[in-house]
Image 1 (cartoon, rainbow, N blue to C red):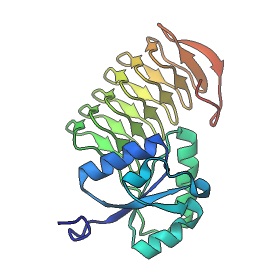
Image 2 (cartoon, one colour; image 1 turned 60 degrees about the vertical axis):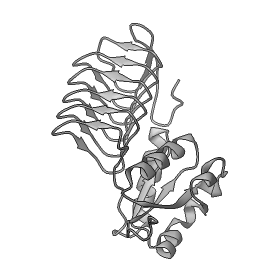
Image 3 (tube, rainbow, N blue to C red; image 1 turned 30 degrees about the vertical axis):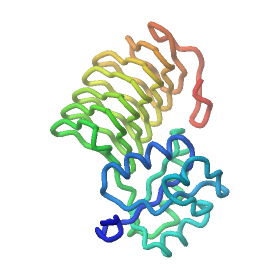
Image 4 (tube, rainbow, N blue to C red; image 1 turned 135 degrees about the horizontal axis):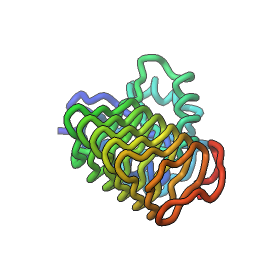
Length: 229
C-alpha cells in the first residue's frame, strides 16, 4: 500500500544538500509522513535528491506548493545552524498556522525516558538521547551522536556525527559540536560557539568562540553566521 493511501500527513523538506538527504532518510524510515518533495533557495541543484523525491522548486514558492499538495508539515534540512534558524523564522512568517515544523526521529535512534525533542529538530540514525535530556527547537543530533542523561541541546544547536557528551552537559543556542568531539560530564558550551572536530572539552566553553584541540582551547572569537572553523 502506498504512503498516500495510508493517509499520512504530507511533508516538504527545505534544502537539497547532504543534510537534506539524511533528513529525508529519517523521514522515510520513520513512516510518519509522506515526503512530497524538496525545495531550495533559488531552486537549488537537484543532486541526489531526485532519487528520493521531486525537487519542486524554489523555497520562495513554498506557500504555493503547500497549498497545491495539501502539505501540513515542513522540515528545514539545512546543516548550518544560523542559516537554519533564519530560514525557519522566515518560513513561519510566510506559511499558514496550520503548517507545523515537527521533530523527525529516525527509528534506529534510542530516546530515553523523560527525554524531549523540540519542534523542527532532527535526530538521525544510530543516535542516543539519554533519559531526561532535552533537545530543544531546530536542533540536529547527527548520525551516531549521543547526548547523555539530562543533557541540554539548546535551540538551533547541533551535534555532528560521532559526538559524545557526558551527562548534564549544556550546549548553547546555535552552537556546533563537530565530528567526533567529546564534551565531558557537566561541562557547558556557550551560545553560538564551535567545538572543532575531535576536540576534548574539559572546561566550559564561553559564548561566541571557536575552540579545538585536546584539550580544547579557544582559538578565536566568532558571531552567528561566521564560518565554523
